[in-house]
Length: 129
Image (cartoon, rainbow, N blue to C red; front, side, top):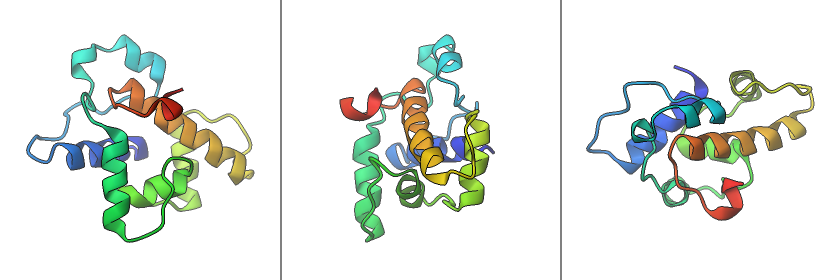
């Protein structure tokens, strides 16, 4: 499973524990996600902020998922190591310098939030843009 797919499955599972995980792997490409049928969006009706805030609260850590890809991944229980973030960047077609981890992390966070929204997740207005 892709790292982005893992992120989506963990969000979906936390938001809808009584429903099975989506069969099709979500697409990290917002344009491709828009081309897919909206009814098939794996995160349909999932309030991403509510789920993430709950996960942060349960973690007992001070995590700022709203601005940090590392904290987002930690809250979800996804490996947030540099190696995994580089793999995620490849999945999402990052074209910048992967040795500039600060720039890559900012880009990753924005792309993950956009991809979650493109897959049907509901985000606060400040994160959906």
